[in-house]
Image (cartoon, rainbow, N blue to C red; front, side, top):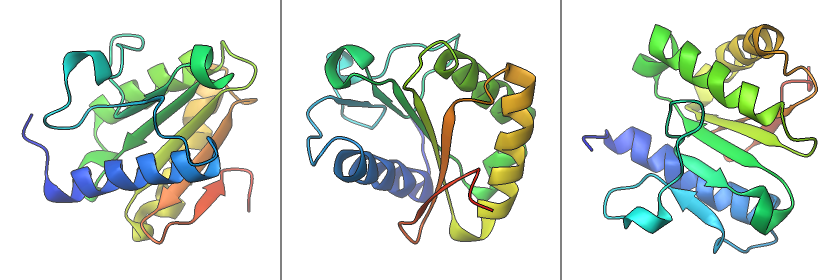
Length: 143
């Protein structure tokens, strides 16, 4: 995996935020696609894509999918397909949460993109949060 330092930092921030804000400081149920992680601790494929962070509904009573995107990745077609696939999976579970970690200056663009993809994926009821590098999680519904 040849991930940029910025991407890895965003993934680690996602893990910390999910652990603290959604799991009550329990990071033991988080699967992350990080260098050095053993196969059993990596996220499963979700509609053909591997998310950066995954929490199984079997262990946390909710599905949580987290993805980190840097400035050069956010506008790519691959990213649109990937995010739409994750949102589609989240739409299958009543208590799912999708979290996108981005640099702080990309938060408005990320919110707009996610809103558009939620409609495309039929995932309007999925709780979607954009986590910027300031450590602030904002729902796409927070206007």
